[in-house]
Image (cartoon, rainbow, N blue to C red; front, side, top):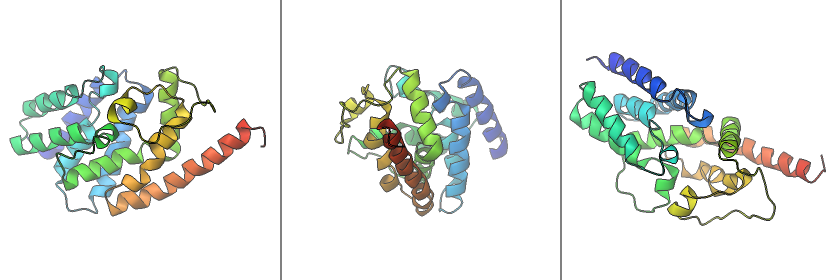
Amino acid sequence: MSNSLIILNTIDFVKKELKDAEGGHDWFHIERVYKNALNIGRHESVDLEVVQLGALLHDIADSKFHDGDETIGPKKAREFLFQQNVSSEVIEHVVKIIANMSFSKSLDKNIIFASPELEVVQDADRLDAIGAIGIARAFNYGGFKDRAIYDPEITPNLNLSKAEYKNSTAPTINHFYEKLLLLRDKMNTKTGKRLAENRHKFMMHYLEQFYSEWEGRN
């Protein structure tokens, strides 16, 4: 099967699987990450097929929506790619990307897999978590989980363990400090770092405006 047909089949599969997904983790999130990954990948020495498939399948079963089970996504991706007669080498690489790219995984401080393709897909996903879209996604998910927007009495935890991060019920504003504002410095590629800069600045300006309005100064 040609690479272009595999990509088209993958897009169709992901759209169907995520038809009723939460708004920040739906097909449109995947599409944005896919575009980001292609943009970054063109400037890196990578296998673009692996990058494309990793980007398209990275959230096929996000553990947040499956009782924290991190094995479902890689398993679904493996089964689908096998049905598409994708080579075993590519399947294993894509599955390892899916299993190792999340922010919570980075809190383990125990890197067990690394590749240039993982770095590209990870940067592409992290870009969609910051800037204007990142802000929209954060508040959408906060509403989905019925979390407070902000509570001055609840301070951000800047030293979250993986378990604490995954089980957090903190207000959405805390999420900026516990994850979103950290992502700029966690980018892997030169292109990712460059694209993250403006998005990071936008979030900082947003928070200034937010606190100003919260205090009635503006």
